[in-house]
Length: 306
Image (tube, rainbow, N blue to C red; front, side, top):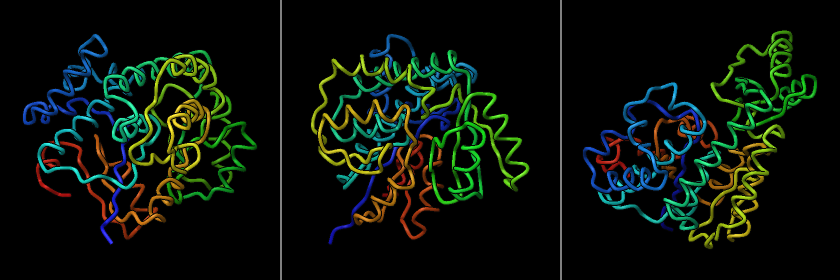
């Protein structure tokens, strides 16, 4: 039986000033991606990736399309440099789901990055209207995290891997959760540098806005299944994709379940395509025996690692 592999695409938090510059300099295919991104958005997103400033790059409205652009530049550079075998499945973490949809042929890249820019804008506005945040709980089990949320008013936002749960909520709820965590032996409560309580009901205004945006979008049928954030199960129709993109804004990201589904369907190699190595670290904890590959810069793309 041929080896089954999945491509996975990172979400917000993977950005860093300078990302993608080496790809631009070394790969005509990557250069074309950055030009397409700039043209699609009507401003030099690529310059923000390469030069910052960091404060502007990390804003949700900018970070999301920037990460998508670099991820797709990595993918296209790898396609030209080493050839890219067809994946059995694709998935992306939060905004990375849009990049996965481009890889699956559901959306064109220009269309996808415009949607992600709008998604980032709406999420940033929702965060301004309903101030909140997110925090990672490390070395905790799910029942402990659920009890903390129940008693603080927070929500489970990401189930990332065994021992790592991200919670989110309004500022008062997060402050209460931090205080309760100290009394319950949760030693690692790590606030995340994001602009709102993503993947919770506080993002309802963003979901309403995206539903209007997505009404006019024609989604093609996926060429390969896309494993959905909100369920950890594959999307196989354009209508299912549209429903998922509205649901994922206010629902928990089921990343652990997504990876377990892929592994349970015979995937033994996971290729993280994009800046950083966040997903690789999570997958290593979910499927310890998996083969893990990163395409995040020119050195990794040109090494013929996969």
